[in-house]
Structure formats: C-alpha cells, structure tokens
Length: 139
Image 1 (cartoon, rainbow, N blue to C red):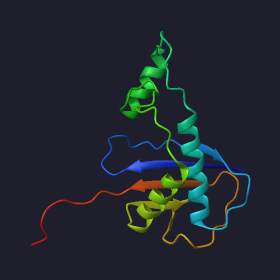
Image 2: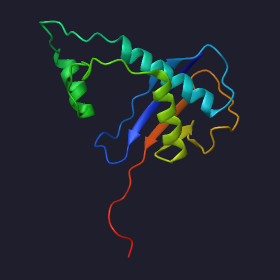
Image 3: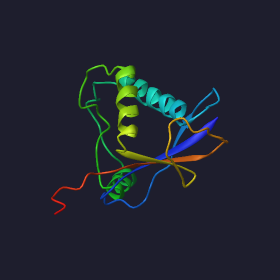
C-alpha cells in the first residue's frame, strides 16, 4: 500500500510541504505500528546509502532551482559513515512522541495516542510537525 508523509519544522522558511511516498505491505493496526514501520524503513535507507560520492558531482539548473526553493542545496551525502541501529531509532521516536516533541496528522486529523486504531487507505497523507520549546521565563 502506498502512503505519503510530509514533515514540517516550526519556523522553517519553506511553506511548501513535499509529499514523500512510502510503502507498507502489512496492515497497520495503530499509530505506533505505523511509526515503527516508517522509522524502520528510513533507518534502513540511511544505512544503505553510499558513503563515497562520485568525483564529478553536478547539478542541472532545474535541480539547483528546486533545491533553492526548499532553502537547502546539498549533494545528498551522509554526514556520518556509522551504522544506525533500528531499535535505538524506534525507541527514540516513541519517547519523542510521548514527550510531545512532534505532532502527527492523518489526512489533517490530529492523532494523540500511539494505541488509537487507524483506518489507513491507499494514498493517505501523514504529516509530521516538529515542535520547538519556547525559551524564557513565564513570570
């Protein structure tokens, strides 16, 4: 089943959210199940990336313009060549959700509990909004 996710950090200059497809084969029961599948896929893709970059790396004018629209031009290289364990990433993600460090929307409906049942259909969109803490005093 093909689903989409998009992510937004509070305060980012880019207002346009890009929908990124991801695929799941097994049915999802709840939000925790979906998040574990998504994080597992992302960590596996990260670990499979090539560490070495080609000698002649270049952008076309269209690619450069697209990257500039998103506010970041990069060559897609990994910053670290270390292997990232999936179980640690899943644990960190679950703790971050419980600490309310990010918000999850399913087709513009807020999901507040990891155990709430999900009805997922083809081409549904999940939006992740990273929340930031406010600094300063309250008195």
